[in-house]
Length: 160
Image (cartoon, rainbow, N blue to C red):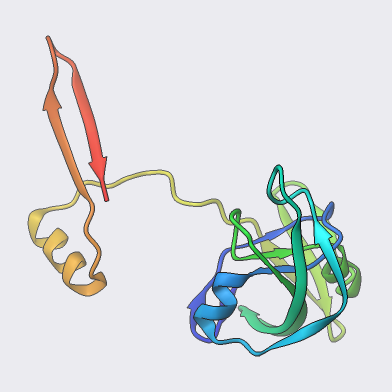
């Protein structure tokens, strides 16, 4: 999902009663907010405390090849940037496809398939030159050290 040129992670959750967006994302993207017409609390997002929802915002986004906009309630979210729940699925006449996993939505008389995208799990080793270019482009650095411990055992340690 792309919003204002930034890539956001989202989860489609048919068990969720609301469309939610992270308060940090709203601040980061500078999205305009409005007061929620009916204040409420969410108890299942953070164990042991209820979160008060008092604001909402319109989220214009695109998932190629379509663009759309939806109304989201603003809350603290740790699992993703945006959580699309039943209101979105109902409005877009969503259908789940089990193999391969995808959600098919209706927008304007057209059907669009949103495939599941798994986060990358493999780590590639790169050369020093590629590493230097990557650091200069992104401004981020991850250090990984592999050192022997005991006989024929290797231990990998990472720090950020």
